[in-house]
Length: 219
Image 1 (cartoon, rainbow, N blue to C red):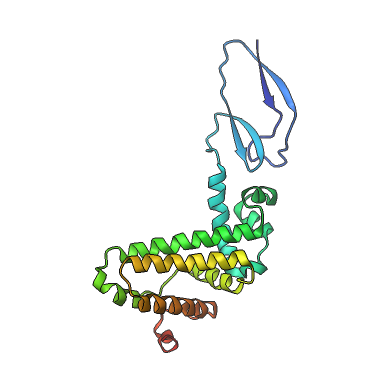
Image 2 (cartoon, helix red, strand yellow):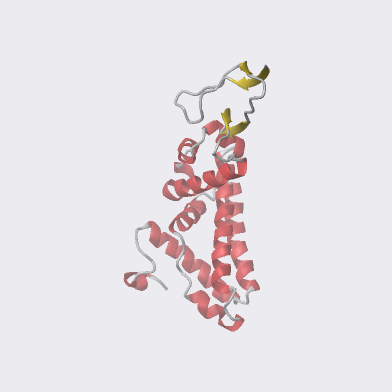
């Protein structure tokens, strides 16, 4: 007789599943059974031959950043609470704080995510543009993801928080260095950044900056 120690837990996804105490299970000799342990949020669940893949902390961070970006875009830094972000991410608030120890830390992570998204967009747009055409191409660059635009706009409004102000400066500095490195002039970059900020404000007001009707509102 083979004795296997396992956790007395409910089936994965079963309503009311809770942590249980260790109990012994006896199996006839020769019976082969494989147990896999899955961490879901902060709970350890035991299953035989599970089909679900282990959700790592990094996977959860991606989920949280996606949910947090949408939440901060809608309500801003001061209007968003971590409870709704945790709920939208499918995790507990306690687990959220294991990933990011404060709302400020979460917002800074979102701003870094925004910075990388913008850099990727700029790279895909301008990497193939000849240096002598960069300024002209940059003058036409206005479209940006709505949530990214709103997060940046809210971030500027939250610059009374020193760490947020630093992250905002870093985001714009990153764009400046990237574009200057591709050969854009200082004046072209300055104009691009100012028009991008204005375009974000138009989006917040419900005006599509790429539409013909907005042309009179743009420099």
